[in-house]
Image 1 (tube, rainbow, N blue to C red):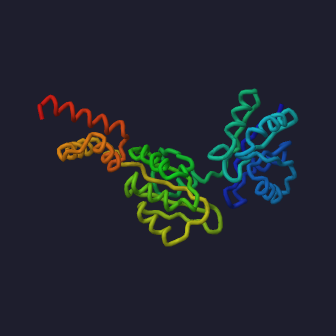
Image 2: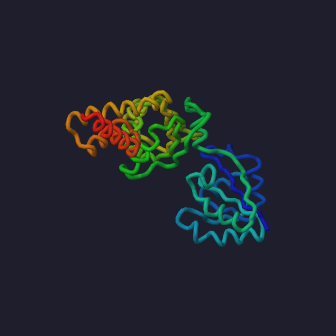
Image 3: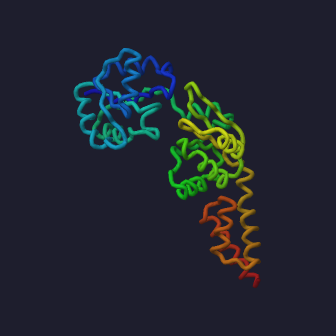
Length: 281
């Protein structure tokens, strides 16, 4: 039985391929590739003639059995279009199925756009939360960002160029104007890392057309700021109640203003109501 190798490939500059990755790709019996055209270009660059088969989002389940069967004859190398397979790219289902059948799975680490952007962002790298690609639909994206608004760890996300401005606008509304970095075309000719507040980065890309895939790195919420949010929300709810706002309307408004989870704000409203009843006010 062969081994399934999960092989990282360059995210731009072909010189970033490792010697080990080249050896594995050369010695494997089959390369399963998300993008056969880019993979064949990489293999040709290094004079590697291993057979290549497609394995991408829309055939990853139908091709699974054939790729696993190939491990009976030798090793299989799984590669994505760029970076590490399985990280916001096809690979998870194949790895899981291989493990369930006792097929050895071995990583061959290398380039990753998320880690590269995080490392040069100028933001804390000791802990981070990987969000993957932000949701395409605006409502889902805003909810997703609101859920991590109080996260103290650095946030890392991917975004397409045609959605960048909308996503930055949603991030500004959900996260507040905190520090960030937007990295595009990493390791390529037009590599750029725009750093500043969210509003500053947004202004930059309103003036400069967004091109290439983006990695967005947002600072986490300051711990002291996060700790003060419930008190701010409680005081705001009290103001709205005194002004005659209904519970639902008040909770909706405070969730929008603070980014706190709805359940937490609703609990604060119930506590406020109970306190008012106990004191007869």
